[in-house]
Image 1 (spheres, rainbow, N blue to C red):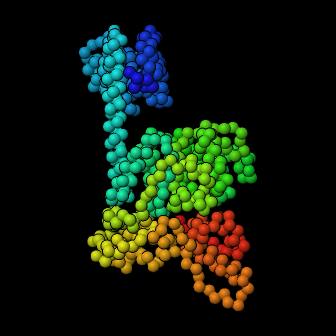
Image 2: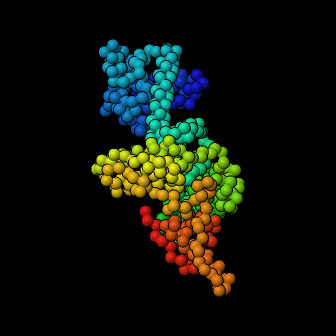
Image 3: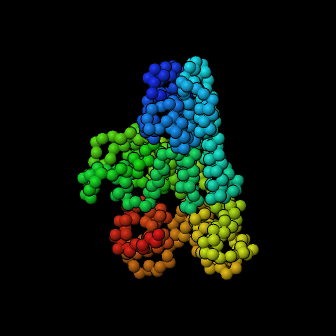
Length: 473
C-alpha cells in the first residue's frame, strides 16, 4: 500500500481502546493518524485540517451524535469518505448512515483485513473522484481560456504547453507583446497547479517607483525608513505557498534583481530593517514584452538571474499572427458591447472585416476589445471601416516586422546656426517630450522606446524641465 503512505485518517471515537487498536493497524500500513473522542473536538479538527478519510463512531458523545456529525461533515466536504463504526450494529442504523452519505457501516468487531480493505476501497474511490473533478476543472479552465484568447491552432498549442508545465514547480517565463494576455496565462497556470488553493499575487514592475519596489517586494519593519510607521509584508511574503507573478521583469532594478536571485536560491526572505529570515515557498512566473536575451543584451536583466528563471518559456503570438482569433474575438466583443450599450448592431461591413484582418493590432486583444466597444458606441446599424483604428495612427508603437519596441520617429526641426551642444540638447529634449506624450506619461515605457534606463530618463526630464503628461487610467 505504498501509494497511501502519506494519506491522513481521522479516528473519532470515545473508546480509547478502539482508537489505540485502529491507530496501530493504520500506522503500521503507513497512514498518518489524528484522533479525538467527542464531536465538538472532531468538528474543530476538520476546520483546521483536511483528512483523506474519517472513521466515525455512531454513538460519539457530545452535543452532536455520530449521524448528525456525518451530515455536517458531508455538508462541509461532500467528497470526503466517512466510515461509520458501531458496537451495536443493526440494519436500520446502517441504512440511515448510508443515506446520510457514509461510504460504509462497520461493526467494531471487525478484523484487521476487513477494515483495511474497506479503507483502501474508500480512498481509491475518493482519489478517483478528485481526479475526475480535476479533469473537469481543466476542461472548464481550457474552455474559459479559449473563450478569452481565441480558438486558433496557436492558442490551442499554447494551452497544451500550459497543461504540461502547470503541475510542476518550474519557473515559467511568459513572453508576449502588450495586450496579448500574459497575466491571464499566468493565472491559468496557477489554477491548474497544485498551489491553486493558495494565493496568486501579481506585481507589475512598471507601476511602482524604483525607490519603493524593494520594500514592496520584500516588505519592511516599522522604523526601517522614513515613513515606515508600521510593519508590512511584501508581495513575496503575501504569495507564500502560492504563485508570484512578476510582470515586466526587465524593469526590476538590477540591485533588486540580485536580492531576488538570492531569495530564489535560498528560499528565504528578510524584510527591510529585520534580521529575521522567513522561509519562502513560491512558484515564480515572470513576464516580459521583449525576449530575455534582449533584456540581458540591454543590461536590463542580470545574466545569473536569466539562467535561474529560464526553466520553461511560453510565447504568446501577437494577434496579427492569429487571424482566426481576430474574427472570433471581434464578434464576441461586439456582442458584449451591444449588451452593455443596449444596442442592436448587425455586425461588420465587408470592408471593416477586411481591415481588421490586415490591421497590425499593436495593442493586441486589449486594443481590439476597446476598439470594438468604441465603434459600437458610435455605430448606427453596423461597424464600418471608418470607425476602426488605422496603422497610420500607431506607427510610434513598434515595427510590425519586429517584436522589439522601436524608438519613435524623430521630429523634423531646423537646428542650423545653433551651437552643437544647444542643438543636441534641444533635439534630445524634443525626443523625450514627444515620447512621453506618445506613452501618455508612462516613463517606464518611454525609457524602453528610447533605449535608455529609467534613471537616465528621470535625470534628463529634470535637466530639461520636461512636464510629464498625467497617465489616464
